[in-house]
Length: 412
Image (cartoon, rainbow, N blue to C red; front, side, top):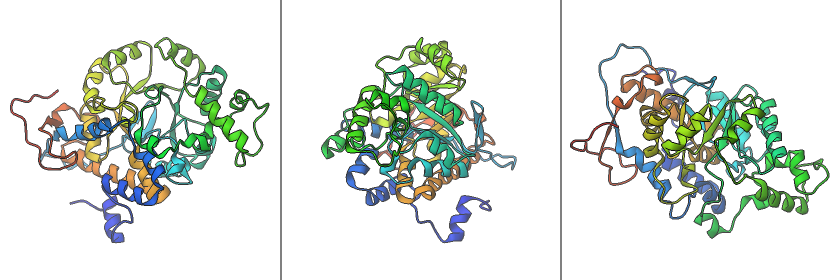
């Protein structure tokens, strides 16, 4: 067995790791490290969190098919998407308010992604400005999540800033335009934006302060008065997203930027078709990690129909419920070109800052690369539905080994 040079060999040489290797272990460690209201904001979902559970459980309904014939050529997990190279098809999802997990927040995540060769998709709601995140990892690869503000000047300002700072694609946030019914947050009474968490991209924008009723941007953004914080939170809540998003709006967006345009939150094949016809460059199948709509269909169940509707016209990415390297492989076998992870990297950030995020990314890359080889592949591009088979769900969402092949089942 080849361990030389791998992350596994490094862990063995060090006599172990300070960080857990399972998604559950990382979640429990993050709970131990964080104030409860911070943890609940990060971990929580909508309502009774049935969509969160469904997202994870969906992966257990697919089994991977093991292969033994091989040519000895090592598996290569790298890929390129919209001109952006990555060492593994796992991207850091745009998870907001990361400073609840660690003071270095998105900057630590940017440095971790740079070191591992992964792509960071920066949230619209960050602890510091998009420029500061770019400066933290100047050789990193990053995309920018665009929450389309209900003010054209602010929208164009954010896009121009992202373009100038070297972001490689614009990810339109389609799946968070109405606040979900998040019971954990309601129970704690904690709304981070009231305390200026997550407003880094806004308080660093001159147009935002005009909308807030101030003549100019404050000189010291680290020392805002209580009046300024209240005005910023109120203004953000008012203009965060415009109420409508229609296919024809994408032509307007195209006129504002040279960056590729990606739409996140696509779960219906008809919408995927309309967006392709509108000229998007890629789309992301996602239900916002179950944070918006309780009782929703698992995002993974939406992936094959969307892939079929797209029919190869644009890349399809996947987000929601990915926890392991084999989850990554299942999503790619079902048609995704890359996946995103949200809660896992935030948990890694909470337990170890930059090193914790690196640990999460390296672990996923190692497990995925191993699974890629064990299913008979050298490259991600050769994965297909021939590599997965539908199985009966196990008793628990992550209870390995208890699935049984369903009689008469066919591949989808």
